[in-house]
Length: 119
Image 1 (tube, rainbow, N blue to C red):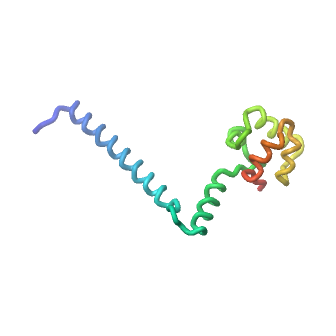
Image 2: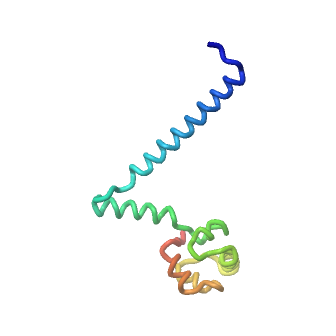
């Protein structure tokens, strides 16, 4: 059976869409299969939790505004004040120094203190 060029293009596009979909499914299965299963040892669960926490950490000495806004409670205005404070006073050495930034309240600091790093 001979196909006209429009049919060939349509089949090519459908094939490409199927390949992309299958790739996404395989990646998702691989990602989920690496997560600890129910009843996993506490060591496996702790390792997974540590990996997730590291992925969420932000280096406040090198982060731009967009990275700072990934932290809970940090919006554009507070991110800008953190950047301004860093430019005026230099690098942060301890998480508690963030409390000196105008608008950094105790609740916001409590929410981010485990997620910030200073490298």
